[in-house]
Length: 208
Image 1 (cartoon, rainbow, N blue to C red):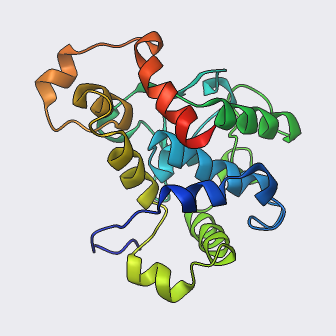
Image 2 (cartoon, one colour):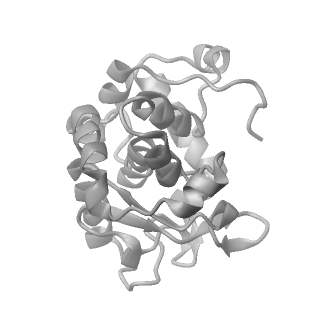
């Protein structure tokens, strides 16, 4: 279970250390799936269940379409509050998502990218968290320090909100994350992927 304590976030330097191209073998112990699912969460602010539920057909060259969320109890469901949305991705995230698809035995449109037991069941959340914590330990963030700072997978969502807040309009940020703190603004504000070029520039700055 996630701790109810306030989440902390990693620094930009720590994030860049985790996601250097040459870190997959050593820091992520040659696990491309866990490198990529964390890169996806960090660069988009997706919830863990939205990452787990990502299907092959929902990955495009410059964006992903969030149409599903995975819960352990109910399986594949609509995203929280039915926050269907298109979210831009930086080139690096796009490259690794497409590499995973290329290497996967499951490449049909409705197959999961982050498959676990089979193409219909994603990697378990417990495994995702354990792999992240191992990678953090490999860059010098010990379990004790991680617990003290309260760094979890959900911290990627806090990271995304923190570093994009103030650099793009709040209505855009709410649209990307699926937050609806201003329901009417969210309901009447409509964006195409072309409206998120400013977001993509910041993504490239952090993850390029």
